[in-house]
Length: 425
Ligand code: AMP
Ligand code: GLY
Image 1 (tube, helix red, strand yellow):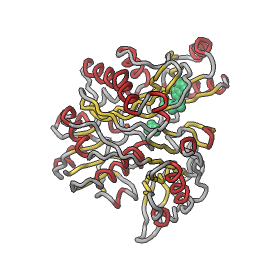
Image 2 (cartoon, rainbow, N blue to C red):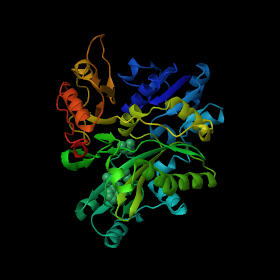
Image 3 (spheres, helix red, strand yellow):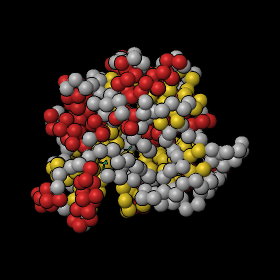
């Protein structure tokens, strides 16, 4: 197949690597891509927010499938334009992408579909925020209602801090004040063709910047899969996945279909396992980052077949995706100052040495260059690289990952040292 992947992050690099690892040979294109993706796909320069330009590229190059990685092109309606022109595309249209683009929209759909989620109040002024705090109590959860790359959310017991966060976002529209939910978090991905869903293996993301879940929320500092503790709680991973499929994924997919905005693409359910049952904290309309980087290396079913089946309405014909028994984890290397003010433009050394560690792959998130052959790439953003490690157990995979990341040099960089530590006994 000829496949075009839109995006430039580690998630897109992981998608490209999974497609390239299939037995079937594919011709892979990416736009805009990054320094790592350039080694595994042909880079194109198509404006990823311009549906007409993406369609023209797809037609000129006889592309069989377009995979949209990030949320911005989805919210911009790129999938709609491709679908109108008959080009198979994995990713929801603008209306369905509101499940991620607007937290208020997602709450309304969940209510309509009776999907379990925390109580939420839409607050348009400081006094409404205060009233919601009184109503819902501490700890306080405040969310900006729009795309904020994981940074629009605050969870704190400090009322003044929570109020300041709300006041910061209020000029751009109402904020959501939510009931605080307590319990372990799970990211579960569902492929959907608008009607049928297929679940991937559950993963856990580490959202806070520093060890021990300290510091601000980020886009994600690491992840691991599978989650061995799910079996203790639910009998097996399979039973957990079936429960979430029945209680969350199918009701939402049916609701979206009934509203005339079918969801074709990846429904990312961000879940909290509370004492009162599984509850949704958020939906995303695309693969998670960094979870994709550790879910896809374990996938044994060809990814291209699943994505094409979803894009063309034939997911029902696909078997349930199968996963290796191996475990996978990723540690994110972030620039100095991430998430508030990441330093960019610094050189990254030691990549080949890191990649030589057994079971390890370096997946690029925000890199460019090198300017000269044989040189080092530079960091171009906050989350720079993912060290992805696959092994027979978490102790092995952790040892490999931390050996590899120790071989990489990037001035001022930081990473978490406790990724999957809790499951590596
Ligand atoms: P979100 O962008 O909605 O996924 O929120 C980012 C992170 O904030 C989540 O992964 C949770 O760790 C935390 N969070 C969000 N909503 C809640 C909530 N209602 N209760 C507790 N923690 C939350
Ligand atoms: N890892 C969180 C996200 O992709 O939004």
